[in-house]
Amino acid sequence: MNITRMDAEPRFAIATFMRVFDVEPKRDVVTLDELTAGLTRFIVKPKLHRAITRDLERIDAAWDAWKAGENPGGRRYGIIARAGRRGGEAAAREAMEGLCKKAKGRAKTDLRLWSPALFTEGGRRDSDHVVSVSCLVLDFDSGVTPQEASSDWARWYHIVHTTWSHRPGKPKLRLCLPLAHPVRAEDWRAVWEWAAERTGMTADPALKSAAATFALPATPYPDAPREAFVHGGALLSPMAEGLVLVPADPPPSIPAQEASHFRGTDPTERTLDMPRTPVKALPTEVVASAFDLFGPPDRPADGPTNESSGGENERSWDDEFDLF
Image 1 (cartoon, rainbow, N blue to C red):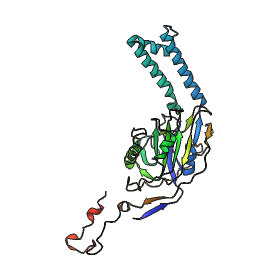
Image 2: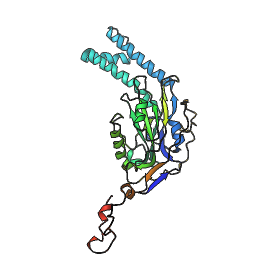
Image 3: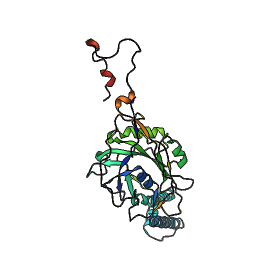
Image 4: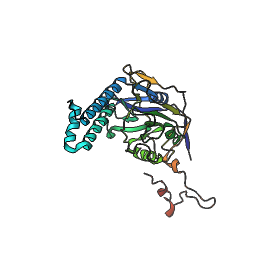
């Protein structure tokens, strides 16, 4: 089997979005060190945290007033009271919990996003406009600790960071495996399904499309519980794992963004970098082609070979390579 060692400095096509509703990706290509730095760099958002906290306090006050039979007025109280008139306390409680969920979800509309995808030039945030994917990203929201999530992927280089809603005793985290080679958009489903099965579905089971976006690391305030670390190893090669037959083309040359979270050059961000020791990825070995993925067919030690000799066996190898 022909094996290629990938020792060259890898580059990763990514895209960033200022807000969840942005549909125009800002394309970029980063090095492994820049990618790692960006995913261990937390954006600090105390104003957002204070706004969410105030909203939750007002919801609690409206709920307490309704239970006490008081009428302080206001939008939140009105929603709870109308639900109570329709369905009693159970309906009122459901309305209150819905308000809390919406308040907490406000962070999702304010946090900045990134995608490990190469979008077409001028394309929009849609799977039809994705050329290839450069990283496998997994969300863990079911109580798995960062160390437990990391142990399942110990063979490969990866970055782990907690997310906005992470709390002690209720870990929320994300794990990113930079790929040794990009994967074509049309091949991505097989890679994701392999990863979901490999995690035993402890990762977010929602199918991640090639255009999936993820919040950049963010924390409510400087002292909030958070964690990020890098695990060394070889880069994950979907070809070596037998998941794809051919890699996508390397990323094109794209002018670097002047204001970049991944390069630490965005003046609008207040950030905290987690301490880390630089870790280099180990050389990655990948098969060079679809032929090498399966290897040559076995031949008898003695006796006739499969070389063309005319007659009915002249095309005897054709079925061996009917891969596409």
